[in-house]
Length: 422
Image 1 (cartoon, rainbow, N blue to C red):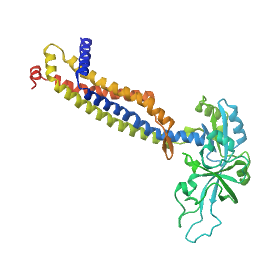
Image 2 (image 1 turned 180 degrees about the vertical axis):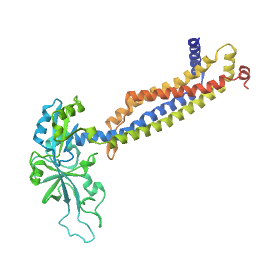
Image 3 (image 1 turned 30 degrees about the vertical axis):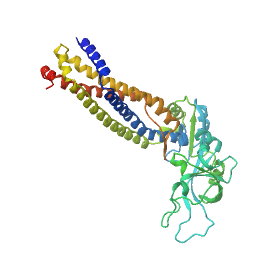
Image 4 (image 1 turned 45 degrees about the horizontal axis):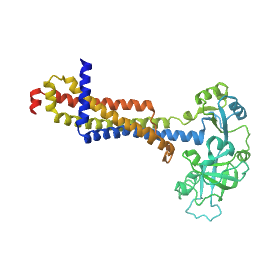
C-alpha cells in the first residue's frame, strides 16, 4: 500500500512539473542553487582564511617541521648533532638552520637631526641564513618584491622586511615615541645604505632587496649571510636558533616528528610540526569562522525553507479543487502529500546539482589558481566532499519538510469544501 501510494505520488509530481509554471519552478531551483552556494562557499571562504594563513606560515617560514630552542635555552643545543640526525630519518628533503639576534637598524643617519624628531631607526630581529638552503625550504627568493636576492658571498648586503619601511608600513617614528621599537624607515630602497647595531657591533650594510610575504615574521626581519652574523655574535657554529625542515611530499609530518623525538633530539630542542608550532590562535580562529559560516548558512537554509513552503502552499492552494477531486476518486492522502514532497526534493536536487557543478568545476579551480589576496594570507576555499555532502543532505531534508507541511494543510481540508473551492 505504501509503495503504491508513493508511486502514485511520483506520477502526480511528474504531471505537476510538466503542466505547472516553468517560471515558478525556475525560481525555486534558483533559490536552492543560491542557498547551496551560500551554505558551502561562504563557510568555505571564512574557514579558508585561517587555513590559508596556516599554509602561508608553513610555506614561507616554518617548513613542514620547525625546531626551536628549549624554554630554558637561548639556542638549539648541539646543533651539529641535530642537523646530522635530520637527514638520517626517512622522508627528509632539506633544511635551513638560522641564527637569530636582536638589532637596531638606522637609516638616513648622515642627515641633520631636528630636536623634535626621533632618529630614523627601528628595533627588529636579524636572521642569519644560508641563502641557497633558505630558498629551497621557504622560497625566500620569491618573496623579494624589489631588488635582488642575497647570495652566500654577500658579506655587507642585507634583505629588509617590507614592514620596516615607510612605503610599505605607512608610518614613521614620531617625537615622544620609542625609536628602537616602533615606526618604520623613510626613503629606504634597494641600494640604500643602513646602519645596523647588533649587540655592541655597529656595521654599515647595503640593502639588496625588500622581502614581502604573508607571514608577519618575514616582513619584520633583516636577513643577512649566516656566517657574517655568526662572526658578529662571536658564537659557536654549533649554536643556532631555528631549523626549518622540508620533507618529501609523501612523508607523514607527525611520523617524522615522532621519529625525531624518539632519536633523542627532543632533549636538545623543541620539535614541532608546522601546525603545532603555530600555537592555538589559528585553530581558534578556524573554529570561530566555522561557527560563523555555519550560522550564516543556517539562515540561508531557513530562508530557502520558508520560500519553498510559501511556493508549495500557493501551488497546493490553487490546486485544492483538483486535490479534492483526487481524494473523491479514491486517491489517498499519502499519495497526494508525497507528490508535493517529491516536487520539493526535485527542486532541491536540481539546485544542489547545479551548485556542485559550479562549486567543484568553476569556483574551486579558480580560487585554487587565484587565491583570495588577504593582507596576511592567501585565502583558499575549504569545501571537502564529506562536509558538502552533510550540508547538502541537511538542505534536502529541510526542503522536504518545507514541501510536506503546506501540502498536508491543504490535503486535510474537507473533500467537498476543497472541490467547491471553499
